[in-house]
Image (cartoon, rainbow, N blue to C red; front, side, top):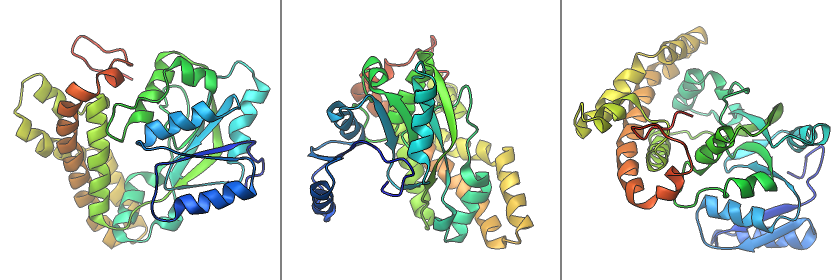
Length: 299
């Protein structure tokens, strides 16, 4: 943040009473830099973001996420579209896997599967918290980020609301964030479990096999088994193996089927758990999105 070509006017940080020295470091920073506003309040990530935005005194909000680093023109690229066109509501930035953190064969396997993880910015792209800017007016209009989810998927719902409300988007492909990746296979499984639970609570990104279960065509126990099998026959798995072989990376190529299968298995398993939990706890979040007669969101 301090290396940005264009510095932010204000930096608002909400600390959920961390006990690892983070708060003390932030407090020292806030005492040295009057742009830093430090708040302590318990709550999950969505609550922290909402508290931070509520306390921000500026209209344009730039958001990033944990586990990433920013390129030096991130702030500049995200704020410029607002200055060139005052009708812009949202600026979607870019992200990719941080190659500097790809330190193991399994991490390289993911890199090959995702082809570096670079999304295609443009109409229909659902922005997340990792690289985005929007006005405080938009934040209020959409009701802030949903706080009734356990932890994950709040930005996925919020981004879908932006598309649903037909807000005016601009795209900043040079506003790049680099996403740090884990080293161990189990960490990838845990990550997908968390994503699956959040998506299930929000009832978004509904897997095909879950729809079969939801429509009473298959029993629940088949969902975690069928979902990875479907993912394995998709073109991404073969493309990933080809990329690894072209690089003579046999170790990564070996991990690719394993990674695809178990990521998908834990995602689907958690989706079932999240869906059931969301029926009771995440009604407000689910009601933010338009749904068809069967309850599916198509954004």
